[in-house]
Amino acid sequence: MNTPTRLSGVFSPVITPFAQDLSPDPARLIRHCQWLLSQDVGLAVFGTNSEANSMSVAEKMKLLDLLAQAGIPGARMMPGTGACALTDAVELTRHAVGHGAGGALMLPPFYYKGVSDDGLFASYAEVIERVADPRLRIYLYHIPQVSNVPISLALIERLLKAYPGVIAGIKDSSGNWENTKAMLDRFQPQGFDVFAGSESFLLANMRGGGVGCITATGNVNPGPIAKLYRTWQQPDADAQQAALDAVRAIFQSLPMIPALKAAAAHFGGDAGFAAVRPPLVALNAQQKTELMAALAAQGFSMPGWSDSK
Image (cartoon, rainbow, N blue to C red):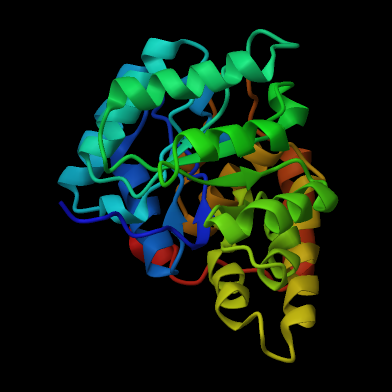
Protein backbone atom coordinates (compact mmCIF):
# COMPACT_ATOMS: atom_id res chain seq x y z
CA MET A 1 0.00 0.00 0.00
CA ASN A 2 1.31 3.46 -0.91
CA THR A 3 2.37 5.72 1.93
CA PRO A 4 0.21 8.87 1.96
CA THR A 5 1.97 12.04 0.80
CA ARG A 6 2.36 14.57 3.58
CA LEU A 7 0.19 17.62 3.08
CA SER A 8 1.57 21.12 2.72
CA GLY A 9 0.66 24.44 1.16
CA VAL A 10 -2.48 26.52 1.47
CA PHE A 11 -5.80 24.90 2.36
CA SER A 12 -9.19 26.52 2.69
CA PRO A 13 -12.05 25.47 4.98
CA VAL A 14 -14.39 25.44 2.01
CA ILE A 15 -17.60 27.40 2.47
CA THR A 16 -20.63 25.13 2.12
CA PRO A 17 -23.31 26.47 -0.23
CA PHE A 18 -26.92 25.83 0.78
CA ALA A 19 -30.04 25.62 -1.34
CA GLN A 20 -33.23 27.55 -0.54
CA ASP A 21 -34.41 24.72 1.72
CA LEU A 22 -31.06 24.94 3.58
CA SER A 23 -29.87 21.56 2.32
CA PRO A 24 -26.25 21.43 1.12
CA ASP A 25 -25.88 22.38 -2.54
CA PRO A 26 -23.44 19.88 -4.11
CA ALA A 27 -23.23 21.56 -7.52
CA ARG A 28 -22.11 24.88 -6.06
CA LEU A 29 -19.73 23.12 -3.66
CA ILE A 30 -18.10 21.17 -6.48
CA ARG A 31 -17.75 24.34 -8.52
CA HIS A 32 -16.07 26.13 -5.63
CA CYS A 33 -13.72 23.22 -4.90
CA GLN A 34 -12.68 23.03 -8.56
CA TRP A 35 -11.93 26.75 -8.63
CA LEU A 36 -9.89 26.56 -5.43
CA LEU A 37 -7.85 23.70 -6.84
CA SER A 38 -7.24 25.75 -9.99
CA GLN A 39 -5.78 28.44 -7.71
CA ASP A 40 -3.42 25.91 -6.05
CA VAL A 41 -5.40 25.77 -2.81
CA GLY A 42 -6.33 22.50 -1.13
CA LEU A 43 -9.66 21.64 0.40
CA ALA A 44 -10.24 21.51 4.15
CA VAL A 45 -13.93 20.76 3.64
CA PHE A 46 -16.04 20.69 6.83
CA GLY A 47 -13.87 23.16 8.67
CA THR A 48 -15.11 25.98 10.89
CA ASN A 49 -15.92 28.26 7.98
CA SER A 50 -17.68 25.39 6.22
CA GLU A 51 -20.41 25.55 8.89
CA ALA A 52 -19.46 21.93 9.55
CA ASN A 53 -20.96 21.79 13.00
CA SER A 54 -24.30 22.85 11.54
CA MET A 55 -24.34 19.72 9.36
CA SER A 56 -24.98 16.06 10.13
CA VAL A 57 -22.50 13.26 9.61
CA ALA A 58 -24.77 11.82 6.91
CA GLU A 59 -24.77 15.12 5.01
CA LYS A 60 -20.98 15.36 5.14
CA MET A 61 -20.49 11.75 4.06
CA LYS A 62 -22.81 12.28 1.10
CA LEU A 63 -20.92 15.40 0.07
CA LEU A 64 -17.63 13.49 0.19
CA ASP A 65 -19.18 10.86 -2.08
CA LEU A 66 -20.30 13.51 -4.56
CA LEU A 67 -16.95 15.31 -4.52
CA ALA A 68 -15.22 12.02 -5.30
CA GLN A 69 -17.68 11.29 -8.11
CA ALA A 70 -16.91 14.74 -9.55
CA GLY A 71 -13.23 13.84 -9.74
CA ILE A 72 -12.03 15.96 -6.81
CA PRO A 73 -8.79 14.22 -5.75
CA GLY A 74 -8.84 12.87 -2.22
CA ALA A 75 -5.14 13.60 -1.87
CA ARG A 76 -5.93 17.34 -2.01
CA MET A 77 -8.52 17.13 0.77
CA MET A 78 -8.23 17.45 4.55
CA PRO A 79 -11.83 17.03 5.72
CA GLY A 80 -12.80 18.11 9.20
CA THR A 81 -13.89 14.96 11.00
CA GLY A 82 -13.82 15.90 14.68
CA ALA A 83 -17.07 15.62 16.62
CA CYS A 84 -18.42 15.62 20.14
CA ALA A 85 -19.68 12.05 19.70
CA LEU A 86 -16.90 9.49 19.40
CA THR A 87 -18.89 7.32 17.01
CA ASP A 88 -19.57 10.30 14.72
CA ALA A 89 -15.86 11.10 14.58
CA VAL A 90 -15.00 7.48 13.80
CA GLU A 91 -17.63 7.13 11.09
CA LEU A 92 -16.73 10.34 9.28
CA THR A 93 -12.99 9.79 9.61
CA ARG A 94 -13.28 6.25 8.24
CA HIS A 95 -15.34 7.56 5.31
CA ALA A 96 -12.79 10.28 4.54
CA VAL A 97 -9.91 7.82 4.60
CA GLY A 98 -11.89 5.52 2.34
CA HIS A 99 -12.05 8.31 -0.23
CA GLY A 100 -8.26 8.71 -0.08
CA ALA A 101 -8.24 11.94 1.90
CA GLY A 102 -4.71 13.17 2.48
CA GLY A 103 -5.53 13.88 6.10
CA ALA A 104 -8.32 14.37 8.61
CA LEU A 105 -8.52 17.66 10.48
CA MET A 106 -9.81 16.79 13.94
CA LEU A 107 -11.28 19.07 16.54
CA PRO A 108 -11.24 17.62 20.03
CA PRO A 109 -14.67 16.71 21.44
CA PHE A 110 -15.74 20.21 22.44
CA TYR A 111 -18.97 20.13 24.44
CA TYR A 112 -17.54 19.29 27.85
CA LYS A 113 -15.16 21.90 29.18
CA GLY A 114 -12.26 21.50 31.57
CA VAL A 115 -11.55 17.97 30.36
CA SER A 116 -8.12 16.51 31.06
CA ASP A 117 -5.36 15.60 28.65
CA ASP A 118 -6.07 12.01 29.66
CA GLY A 119 -9.60 12.34 28.34
CA LEU A 120 -8.52 14.01 25.10
CA PHE A 121 -5.79 11.42 24.56
CA ALA A 122 -8.36 8.66 25.03
CA SER A 123 -10.69 10.30 22.50
CA TYR A 124 -8.07 10.58 19.76
CA ALA A 125 -6.75 7.11 20.56
CA GLU A 126 -10.20 5.55 20.23
CA VAL A 127 -10.69 7.13 16.81
CA ILE A 128 -7.30 5.89 15.63
CA GLU A 129 -7.81 2.37 16.96
CA ARG A 130 -11.35 2.07 15.61
CA VAL A 131 -10.58 3.43 12.16
CA ALA A 132 -7.59 1.09 12.11
CA ASP A 133 -6.37 2.13 8.66
CA PRO A 134 -2.66 2.64 7.86
CA ARG A 135 -3.62 5.47 5.52
CA LEU A 136 -5.01 7.59 8.37
CA ARG A 137 -3.20 10.89 8.96
CA ILE A 138 -4.61 13.13 11.69
CA TYR A 139 -4.06 16.86 11.85
CA LEU A 140 -5.07 18.16 15.27
CA TYR A 141 -7.20 21.30 15.29
CA HIS A 142 -6.35 23.81 18.03
CA ILE A 143 -8.91 26.63 18.16
CA PRO A 144 -9.43 27.24 21.88
CA GLN A 145 -11.22 30.57 21.49
CA VAL A 146 -14.07 28.65 19.80
CA SER A 147 -13.85 25.11 21.17
CA ASN A 148 -12.79 26.11 24.71
CA VAL A 149 -10.89 22.80 24.66
CA PRO A 150 -7.19 23.51 24.07
CA ILE A 151 -4.70 21.02 22.70
CA SER A 152 -1.66 21.28 24.95
CA LEU A 153 1.96 20.70 24.04
CA ALA A 154 2.00 17.83 26.53
CA LEU A 155 -0.93 16.17 24.75
CA ILE A 156 0.79 16.51 21.38
CA GLU A 157 3.94 14.94 22.81
CA ARG A 158 1.96 12.02 24.18
CA LEU A 159 0.03 11.42 20.95
CA LEU A 160 3.20 11.59 18.85
CA LYS A 161 4.86 9.00 21.05
CA ALA A 162 1.86 6.65 20.94
CA TYR A 163 0.94 7.11 17.26
CA PRO A 164 3.99 8.23 15.27
CA GLY A 165 3.12 8.88 11.65
CA VAL A 166 -0.62 8.83 12.29
CA ILE A 167 -0.46 12.11 14.22
CA ALA A 168 0.83 14.11 11.28
CA GLY A 169 0.46 17.73 12.30
CA ILE A 170 -1.75 20.52 13.57
CA LYS A 171 -3.71 23.58 12.53
CA ASP A 172 -2.98 26.23 15.16
CA SER A 173 -5.84 28.72 15.05
CA SER A 174 -5.10 30.16 18.48
CA GLY A 175 -3.92 33.43 16.94
CA ASN A 176 -0.98 33.25 19.35
CA TRP A 177 2.28 33.19 17.42
CA GLU A 178 4.27 32.19 20.51
CA ASN A 179 2.15 29.05 20.77
CA THR A 180 2.71 28.23 17.10
CA LYS A 181 6.43 28.85 17.48
CA ALA A 182 6.55 26.52 20.48
CA MET A 183 4.96 23.78 18.39
CA LEU A 184 7.45 24.36 15.60
CA ASP A 185 10.46 24.39 17.90
CA ARG A 186 9.42 21.34 19.87
CA PHE A 187 7.75 19.05 17.32
CA GLN A 188 8.80 20.02 13.80
CA PRO A 189 12.07 18.09 14.19
CA GLN A 190 9.93 15.00 14.89
CA GLY A 191 8.19 15.32 11.53
CA PHE A 192 5.12 17.04 12.96
CA ASP A 193 3.76 19.50 10.39
CA VAL A 194 2.44 22.85 11.58
CA PHE A 195 -0.15 24.82 9.61
CA ALA A 196 -0.90 28.37 10.70
CA GLY A 197 -4.60 28.98 11.23
CA SER A 198 -4.69 32.01 8.95
CA GLU A 199 -2.58 33.65 6.29
CA SER A 200 -1.77 36.38 8.80
CA PHE A 201 0.92 34.05 10.14
CA LEU A 202 1.84 32.36 6.86
CA LEU A 203 5.17 34.09 6.32
CA ALA A 204 6.24 33.70 9.95
CA ASN A 205 5.19 30.06 9.89
CA MET A 206 7.18 29.31 6.75
CA ARG A 207 10.25 31.07 8.15
CA GLY A 208 9.87 28.99 11.30
CA GLY A 209 9.77 25.66 9.49
CA GLY A 210 6.00 25.31 9.06
CA VAL A 211 4.28 23.80 6.05
CA GLY A 212 1.61 26.35 5.13
CA CYS A 213 -1.73 27.62 6.39
CA ILE A 214 -5.39 26.64 6.53
CA THR A 215 -7.31 29.85 6.17
CA ALA A 216 -10.88 31.10 5.83
CA THR A 217 -9.97 33.80 3.33
CA GLY A 218 -8.47 31.15 1.10
CA ASN A 219 -12.07 30.83 -0.06
CA VAL A 220 -12.00 34.24 -1.72
CA ASN A 221 -8.34 35.29 -2.01
CA PRO A 222 -6.68 31.97 -2.87
CA GLY A 223 -4.25 33.00 -5.59
CA PRO A 224 -2.30 35.65 -3.65
CA ILE A 225 -2.14 33.47 -0.52
CA ALA A 226 -0.84 30.51 -2.52
CA LYS A 227 1.67 32.80 -4.20
CA LEU A 228 3.15 33.83 -0.85
CA TYR A 229 3.45 30.17 0.12
CA ARG A 230 5.40 29.49 -3.08
CA THR A 231 7.56 32.62 -2.95
CA TRP A 232 8.05 33.23 0.77
CA GLN A 233 11.82 33.36 0.32
CA GLN A 234 11.62 36.16 -2.26
CA PRO A 235 12.52 39.79 -1.42
CA ASP A 236 8.91 40.98 -1.70
CA ALA A 237 7.52 38.43 0.76
CA ASP A 238 6.89 40.99 3.50
CA ALA A 239 5.03 43.24 1.06
CA GLN A 240 2.94 40.27 -0.05
CA GLN A 241 2.13 39.49 3.58
CA ALA A 242 1.04 43.08 4.19
CA ALA A 243 -1.30 42.97 1.20
CA LEU A 244 -2.84 39.72 2.44
CA ASP A 245 -3.30 41.23 5.89
CA ALA A 246 -5.18 44.21 4.43
CA VAL A 247 -7.70 41.96 2.71
CA ARG A 248 -8.02 39.75 5.77
CA ALA A 249 -8.81 42.78 7.94
CA ILE A 250 -11.76 43.67 5.72
CA PHE A 251 -13.37 40.26 6.11
CA GLN A 252 -12.61 40.13 9.83
CA SER A 253 -14.41 43.45 10.34
CA LEU A 254 -17.70 41.65 9.62
CA PRO A 255 -19.12 38.26 10.58
CA MET A 256 -16.58 36.12 8.73
CA ILE A 257 -18.64 33.30 7.23
CA PRO A 258 -21.49 35.50 5.93
CA ALA A 259 -18.89 37.94 4.56
CA LEU A 260 -17.04 35.19 2.68
CA LYS A 261 -20.28 33.95 1.21
CA ALA A 262 -21.39 37.45 0.27
CA ALA A 263 -18.13 37.98 -1.62
CA ALA A 264 -18.45 34.63 -3.40
CA ALA A 265 -22.01 35.52 -4.39
CA HIS A 266 -21.05 39.00 -5.60
CA PHE A 267 -17.95 38.19 -7.59
CA GLY A 268 -19.40 34.96 -8.93
CA GLY A 269 -22.66 36.51 -10.04
CA ASP A 270 -24.59 33.89 -8.07
CA ALA A 271 -26.74 35.23 -5.23
CA GLY A 272 -27.40 31.70 -3.99
CA PHE A 273 -23.88 31.49 -2.59
CA ALA A 274 -24.79 33.97 0.15
CA ALA A 275 -27.10 31.57 2.02
CA VAL A 276 -26.03 30.48 5.50
CA ARG A 277 -27.59 27.88 7.77
CA PRO A 278 -29.04 29.05 11.08
CA PRO A 279 -28.00 30.12 13.61
CA LEU A 280 -25.83 32.24 11.30
CA VAL A 281 -27.44 35.18 9.50
CA ALA A 282 -26.50 36.57 6.09
CA LEU A 283 -25.08 40.08 5.84
CA ASN A 284 -27.66 42.83 5.66
CA ALA A 285 -27.70 45.38 2.83
CA GLN A 286 -25.58 47.92 4.70
CA GLN A 287 -22.96 45.34 5.62
CA LYS A 288 -22.75 44.13 2.03
CA THR A 289 -22.32 47.69 0.80
CA GLU A 290 -19.54 48.28 3.33
CA LEU A 291 -17.82 45.03 2.38
CA MET A 292 -17.87 45.68 -1.35
CA ALA A 293 -16.71 49.28 -0.94
CA ALA A 294 -13.78 48.23 1.22
CA LEU A 295 -12.81 45.46 -1.20
CA ALA A 296 -13.06 47.83 -4.17
CA ALA A 297 -10.74 50.27 -2.39
CA GLN A 298 -8.18 47.46 -2.17
CA GLY A 299 -8.60 46.59 -5.85
CA PHE A 300 -9.78 43.14 -4.78
CA SER A 301 -11.03 40.59 -7.30
CA MET A 302 -11.56 36.83 -7.62
CA PRO A 303 -9.92 35.98 -10.98
CA GLY A 304 -11.61 33.17 -12.85
CA TRP A 305 -14.38 32.71 -10.31
CA SER A 306 -17.22 34.13 -12.41
CA ASP A 307 -16.01 32.05 -15.36
CA SER A 308 -16.26 28.81 -13.37
CA LYS A 309 -20.04 28.60 -13.58
